[in-house]
Length: 626
Picture 1: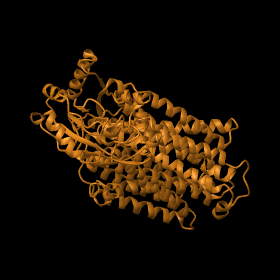
Picture 2 (picture 1 turned 90 degrees about the vertical axis):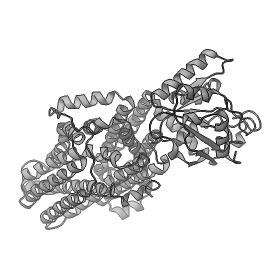
Picture 3 (picture 1 turned 60 degrees about the vertical axis):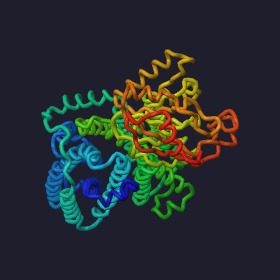
Picture 4 (picture 1 turned 90 degrees about the horizontal axis):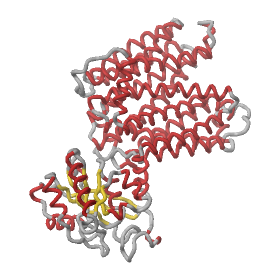
């Protein structure tokens, strides 16, 4: 069941114990951290002469510091050793940290409290590379997006509940004992759940640990840059943490000074944001069709800009008297603000989940944990820069809503820059829009397409967007061979070029282009690519299949790889087909959500491939639904 529903993973031992372990760890982090921050804000004078504001900022810095110092080492450990054993060791470490923190709370010992906070940052640093690199070892490719969505949802839910509970515990008369018992008990529960995590063998058991964090961090970043898409995805994730940290850091003062709300209103705001992130993260699996759909990333970035802009325009010019949650919700405009926060969270989920999944699936397995560790370092750096920018803007006289405006504009600029460098994101977004607006795609037999290695896909040719529909359905990147005239269609040409599609001509039209195309097909298959061709050689103008040309035989004779027959259904009569004359001329055919289907048949061995035989198989797969 888990292959159809991400919640089904919660019934699987390969996912549930890990999910519970990471949830409890994030929850405990925030119970302790928020309890400490609130205690220092209200009781600092009783234990130290340092101001409460200075202490709160010191705590934030100390929690982030281990990410700079130890992420490189954490990544190496996660690649060298069994990840399940590392997690159990980290959970034992967490119990010790919480014992130190508990003694600090009970005895009002600031030094122990600060040491425990720093060690919790170290705990998170060690856990980070394992958190994301273990998923590809325990989940199938079609479960990666759903698994990441569950992890992101669980993390933000844990942050929300932990933050609220930490504040509630400190408000009690015997808060020291209550906080102490809670954090130690949760740490012990995390260790117990970690014992059920299945083994995750090391990806690079012979790795020699480089204990120098500076040189190792630089080496990791250099390695990551070799894969341009992965590196820019890392930068995209770090930008999200810059964006999120900028907004979240302003929530308390925005609530009090701009909205006129008390701490309960601030809690409502955090709750709405967290619900949004969780919802967006969970929706990613459904919207992506159980595959890594990076087309959601531009969609997410658009939403992050639009709703941050609206948050600026929705903010009142002057705060009213301080009120509680009920009074705030009764005010005009309050629901618009909360809706903006929810939608920022939703689109944040659309943005972040595919990026993490892309790193997991496209980075080299032997370096995966170290790449994620490098990502964590950059995340921390961007969060520090976010804090510096916010302080500078406030010092320059900017209001908090104006900081939201600046962040929204910067997000749009960063998005345009990244998608210009890697047009694959924008290409996938346009494909995703096509499949989720003009068409409603049903898929059958996709598991018959090899998960790795070279293969040739063959399909009937019904419309000008056949290649885009197949690309949207396939989990693996697919290269297409298409007629050179179709390749040059405006707008679509951008998608075709970005997808490394191969223009071809007949020998009569352009023999040199034909030879180049055949050479490129052979080179792609030699490199292990999926190549899709339309053996009819033309788009049908009557709805029926034209005879398959001999080119498929020539390709297989030169590169003997499996051939997978497929059939598109329902596209005849659509806006992009030639039914009734020229395609894309009758706008009445552009009805939204037209039902179409892609059916995949069993792979054929090279020796069994003939044009006539393939045509019959594709015809039978299509059936009467043209």
